[in-house]
Every structure is written in structure tokens, then in C-alpha cells.
Amino acid sequence: MSFNSGSASGSSSWRSRRQFEGSDNPKFCTCEFEGKRLKASIMTSWTEENPGRRFYGCRNWKSKNCGYFDWIDEPITERAKEVINDLKNENVKLMKTKNESSKTATIDMECEIGMLWDVVQEMKEDSNKMMKKIRLVSFLFLASWLVFAYLAIA
Image 1 (cartoon, rainbow, N blue to C red):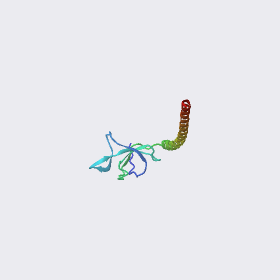
Image 2 (tube, rainbow, N blue to C red):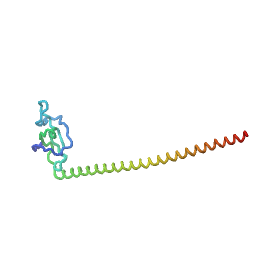
Image 3 (tube, rainbow, N blue to C red):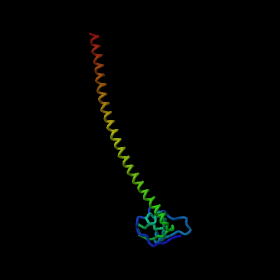
């Protein structure tokens, strides 16, 4: 069930990978660490030609350009490729739309905050005006009592 297609080029076709464990027949690449060959990782291809197809690959393929590559999954049909690629492209569009709507929501929120800030500033100004009026009324009230007290004594 494994299809070996030679060496892998350094394309961006692999998005996810994990260490292969729990197999009776693990795959090893040609890279070595502390004198031992490294287990190959299971990765997933996201190219147009092999979308979602899993393979064994060297975990150091970017840094060491090892080139170890061995398919796990059999080739998929043209219809399956079309469906998976359409779903992948639709997901990309949805993520872009989500990001754009998130940006729009952020801008709307910033506008709302700005408007609320203006309202708060107006309320502070109104509060200051009201406090001045209260002080004036209090002063006039006190002055009137002083006038009444002076007239009552005199």
C-alpha cells in the first residue's frame, strides 16, 4: 500500500506532521541523530495534485534537505481531488471573510468607543456647568440668610 516516489522537493505541500509511533514496521530516513537513524514523520500533502494524502517524510526536510519520502495513502481519484481542493479553497475564502469581518467589527467598535468617549466628555462638561450653578445657588442662598439675619438683628 506504500508508494515510493523518490525524493521530496522543498515545497509548501506539507501542513501537518506527527511522529510515527506504534507501528510494527516504522519507516526511517537517512538522517542520523547521536548515531541512530531518525524515524520518519507522517505528514499530509496539501498540493493540488495530492490534497490530503499522507506520506512518510524526514522531519528535517527543511533544514537538512534529506529527501526521504514514501507515500502511505494510495493515489486518490480525480473527483476526490476536485472535491478536496474545492473544500480547501472554500475554507481559505471563509477564513479571509472571517478576518475581514473581524477587522470591520474592530473598526466599528473603535468608532463606538470614540462616540462614547465624546458623550463622556460632554457629560463631564455638563457636570462642571451644573456644579458651578449649584455653587452659585448655594452662595446666593447663604447670602440671603445673612441678609435676613442682619435685618432681623438691626
